[in-house]
Length: 362
Image (tube, rainbow, N blue to C red; front, side, top):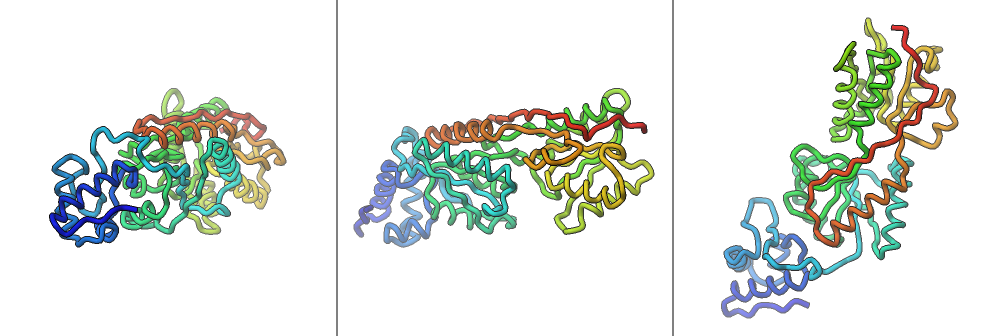
C-alpha cells in the first residue's frame, strides 16, 4: 500500500511518493488523472499540481496538455520494473456474438497461443466508438482494465490517435488510420485487390464493381487503391464502380440496382465481405441471372461455406493459424519490450481460383 505524504512540504513529499510509485511499477506509461491521483494520495488538487510541476521540471513526466494524461518519461526506468498483469486486451466495437466466423476462429487461436505462454486474452467492447472525442472514456477504461498491451480491432481514428498520443503499448489488427504510427498487422488488401483487378482484366473485364461497406477503414482504402491501380492504368484502362452498403436491410440490393441500371454496367463484381456473396447470388437468382454467365465474381474474403457453392467462388484466403501466430509474436514483443516500431506487417493472402470468373464479351 502506498504511503501518504505528511503535511509539511506536501508538494515535495507527494512528488517523492509518485516517483516511488513509478519506479515500483504501479503506473505504466501514464499517470492517472489528477482527480484519481489526488484521491489516492489524499491531498488537494492544488497541492498535486505543485508536485506535478516538480516532477515535470525534473524530467519524470511530460508537460501538461489539456485533456490528456501526463506520460512517464523518466530515463532509465526499466520495462521489467513495471507491474506485469500477463493479460492482453482485444479492443473492438463488436461483441463476441457479433464476430464473423473467421474472426471467432482467429480470436480463439490467439487466446490459445497466449495461454500457452502464460497470458490471458480479454475482449473489451465499450460503447465509445461512436464518440468524436472518446478521450475521457478511454482514460477511464485504461484505468479500470489492467493489461500489458492492447490489440485494436476496427477502432476508428479518434481511438487509434488516443492510444498513440498516450504512448500505450498497442497493436492495430488491421490498417492504421492516416498519420497513426502504432505497429499494425493485417492482410495486404492493396496487393490482393491489385491481383484481383489484374485477373479480371486479363479475362477482358474493364468495368468492375467494388461492393464495400460504408465505413472508414484503412484496409478498405487500400483495397480501393489497389483495384484502381490495376484497372485504371496500363493498356486498355477500365473503370471501377463503388457500390456502397450503408448498413440498411435493402442497401446492397439498391446499390446493385443502381449499378446495373447504368448504360454500361459492371461485368464483374469484387466483394469485400462474405455476406455480399450471398446478397449478390440471391439478387441474381431473383432475376434469373447466373454466375459467371451473366456476371463474374471475386471475393476478397473466405468462409468455409464457400465450399458448398456452385459455381465455386474465386477468392483470397490466409490461413488463420498463420495470422494468429503473427499476432501473438508481435503483441508479446510489444508487451514485454514496449516496442514502438511503426513497422507494418502485411501478409499476402493466397488466391484460390474457382469457376466464378469467365471471359467477358464486352
